[in-house]
Structure formats: structure tokens, C-alpha cells
Image (cartoon, rainbow over all chains, first blue to last red; front, side):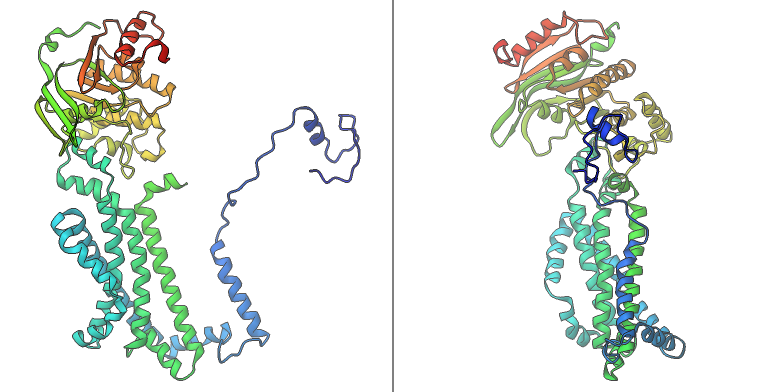
Length: 293
Length: 244
């Protein structure tokens, strides 16, 4: 167990070894309590989430600098940065970003409202459930991106169909998770509400809705991710503006750096929106922190 | 504590031929019972003897259960469950005030929390309370409604022995101050003897034993004179000497 080089067998207090006089003594007489091996990972260090991406970036930079990467396939990080700032000041990047953001935000807002309303109608009334739940699940079974050709025929190739597709991608996870949370309310709490004499309205407002919020947030995060996913696909197939269009054009001219700029912007928006939802979730569900911490 | 004889004349709860059955199995078999106003009654029985079914019937919580018979209960009934049933997303005071009406509800809620010894924990989340504290909060929640009848379904069953003894004292104290009729469902014979003035034993869907415990409060768990009651109750529950 101990790997000291001392071969002394004398472990009493007369030991002249001054480097560790206490340990052998304690072991001999009372056998000190040793802390158990810790199995949980230690305390989280600040900003550790950024370590992985930073390492990838460093590796990418090093490989580019050493000339290991074909600049035509994977341009160096600084080239991407340069292109990004050039597109920002002299090109259409701000316009493209704005267009994309508008599409995502509009589609997401519509999907959010529709998802919540349908979940409430279906989770709180039996009639609503009979009418809505099966229909939404049918909708879910159809890959939404497969609806694109039909929607183009119905709504034209303008903004409307793009927003409609994004809204569908968003509303489904929000509906499913919120509805599951609403209908899965603990029957003990229902009983409590009956005993306390709550009205139907108060029961919904004070018991059902707050109880369903955790499920709603799961759906919300899936919905946010979904809105970006839908946007990327839509803008690469049928668009005359926006980030995806910019990348599509760049593909035709072999501008890898522009494509990478587009991907970086998508990534940043995805991260920001997900963090925003997380922050809101943590504030709204602050009662949960007492359990997890 | 002298019995309030004028209160004891009018029964708070009246059961006549109360029958309840689940899928053809009769759980309550024509129970006749009067619970006088302001009396602390304990209801003992094996698990599955129908104690909770009886309590839930009186509370009006047995939706869709087949049954017949007459049942009258007061207007204001509160229930304390075995679990505290605090809503985790409402702070302690807001939990106590669940369903409380009126302008002075907040004041009454604070007063109830103070009575159960939780003053200062109004803003705590239920997840931050110990088991005993949570059950105290549940008691406060039932008090806010100023119940005429308090139904308690094994309210201390999930607590450790030390906390349970302290809660016994609290329940008795609250009862003496507010004087609701109490029906305490329990499987703990000692708990019934120490707390209640009357102990009922439910056996095969009927009241098998109706025992008045005529000893002054506060009662000690070690009081030898209570041993006689214990023997009778255990016998009624079918626990004989050689079972122990």
C-alpha cells in the first residue's frame, strides 16, 4: 500500500523519520479513518464546456498552418474569419442573417402558440383529446420535410410555405411533451385539489399548468433545435435569400470558406437560442434546483 | 381536559348502512357509526381492512366506487394524507394557502404555520423541508380551512419514530385548541391509545370494536393502565400472545 523506500520496521514514536511522523503512528494505534475513494466526478470547473471546441479549433489551426489541409476543402480558420468580416462589411451577410432570423422566429412563434393551444385543448378536455391527439400523432408520423413539395404547390415558393414548415417542425415536439405532462398529472395532486375545494379554473392554473411546465420546456428545447434544422433544409432547397441561400451559391462557385461562415453562424444561433431557453427554464423552474443541487 | 358535553350531543358524522365494494368484493359492509362533534377518534385495522375506503367515503373522494347507504358530514372537511402532498412548485406558505379564500387568508396561513412550528419557513420550497416539517406544513394547510372535521389517513405513517412522537403531541395540542372532530386512521395501536378518546377497530368491513379510552391527557406511552386497552385492541385485531 505505502510505497516509501524506508525499510524501517520501527513505527513507534521513537521513529526518527521526520518526513511523515504521524501516519505510521496513527496506523499502529487508532487506525485513522481514511476517506473513501470518490466516485462522483469532482467539482465542475468554470467554462469547461468551451475546452473541447477550443481544442478542435487549435487542432484545425495547427493543421492548416502546417499545410496538412487542402485549403480548397477545409480553409484555415483565419480565412473563414476574414471571409466572414468581408461578407459582413461588403457583402450581404447582415441581410442574409436577418432574413434567416425572421423566418426562424416567425415560424417558431407560430409553432409555439399552436403547440401550446393544442396541448391545452387536448390535455384538459376529453373532446379536445379525441379530436386533436390522434390527428397530431398522424401528422407526426409524416416526415415534415416530405410536405415541402405539397406546401410549395399550395402556398407558392415565397415566405409563407417556409414559415409553415418551420411552424410544423416546432409545434409537434412542443405539443407532444406538453400534452404528455398535462395528462400525466399526479392523481394525488388531483385528489388534494378536490379536498382543498379548488375550482376547475384554479385547479388548472395552480396545479395542472405548473406541474406540466417541466415537460413543456423539454418540448420547447426540441422545438428551438427543430426550427434551425428546418430552416437549414428550406433555405438550401428553395430560397433566393438567407444564410442557406448564401451557402448554396457558394457551393456552385466552390467557395468553401463562405460555406463555413454560414455553418458557424448557424451554430452560434443554435447555441444562443438553446442557452436562452435554458436560462428561462432555470428561472421558471427554480423550485427544482433545490432537488438537484 | 373536561369534555365539552354540549358539543357531544350533535354528531358531526353519521353513517347508516354504509356499503362500498370494489369489483364485487365488499370492503365496507353496512357500517352504522356516529362521530360526535369535537371528538378525537382513531380507526384501527389491518391493511386492506377498508380503513382508507371509509375515510375516503367520508371525505367524498370515492368517485366511481359502487356502494349504498347514508352519509352525512360537515361542510368544512380537511384531509391530511400519509404523504404531505405539498405541491413542489409552490412555496410553503402558498401550499398552505391552496384553496384558501378571503382577504385575511395570508394572515391565517402565517398563523397556521406558526402554530405548527414552521414560522420563518414560509418562503421555503417543499423540497427543502424534512419529512416531519413537510407533514407539519400539511397540518397547517388543513387548519387554514378551520375544519369542523379533520380526516387523517395514517398521517404519521411515513415518519421516523422520534418525529412521530413529537407529531402526536402537536396533533393533540391542535385538536385541544381548535376542537374539530378528528378521524385518525392508523395501523399503530399505541398511536391510537395515546391520542384518541375513542378507538374503533374495523374488521371485515364492519366496526368490530368500539372502545372509549377514559384516561387523562397527556398520556405516556409507558402508562401501565393503557396496557389493558392495548391487549383488548390487539385481540380485536387478531394478534394474540403467541403471534408476538
